Image (cartoon, rainbow, N blue to C red):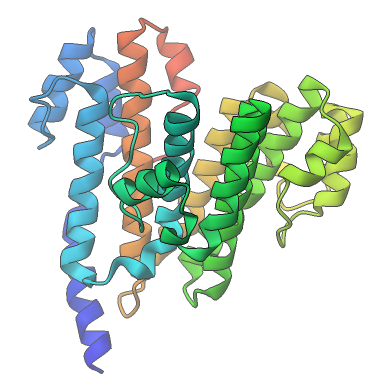
Length: 322
């Protein structure tokens, strides 16, 4: 009973926070802005800290604000590890390239993760991978090896991305929460489809595809790999027989259109969790909703900075949670 009461309080806090999530009206207000600076003024009015003026720093601050709230409500963030593994493996990729290629990019590391980025960098610098969580060790060692010996940046990415997807899928499978399960499955399936499409367009071999794709429940990756070798049309023919049949037109259009379709599908799937007050699901759904909001604002800000047409930006906007 105590656990339920804890979640009732936490969910009540989340429900109040949901009121400040951006709806279509706010997105239209941002889209109507003439300049990037006008957008920042709108965001400031909505309670965002825009003092840095940098889109990257503004979005990072909002992301950290969200996770600070999660820590206050839940305490132990390990229940949300499935959402954070992507950051861990992004940081691993950045550390490997910084050490092995002397590629030092400012502000490249994400602070929100399950492993301190400083520890990841230290482990790679010292080539002591025992400092890392066991699932990361093999990927880190293999990625360093292919980069140092073969100078193969693409294979380095494949190794780390593959490990990240496996970690996400396993975390989803081990969770008893529907939001985490759906997030993990859709994340891995979407990544597999993106890999297949890009491989088809660049003429990758079946061997490459087998090494890059990660088996998941909603896709037969062997069939997907064989389809990719034959071309994008074969991929869409296969997808038409899967739960991702609705994504066919998006896949045919562009990678960004497909990513938008996947994000919208996830929001659609988690929206009912708002009305489930006795579990952690509404908190998990809110975290995903906020990430979706931050991603949408990034698209708009990027459009303003690069003077993209409204039509081009609108094609990439995500559905709102509220």
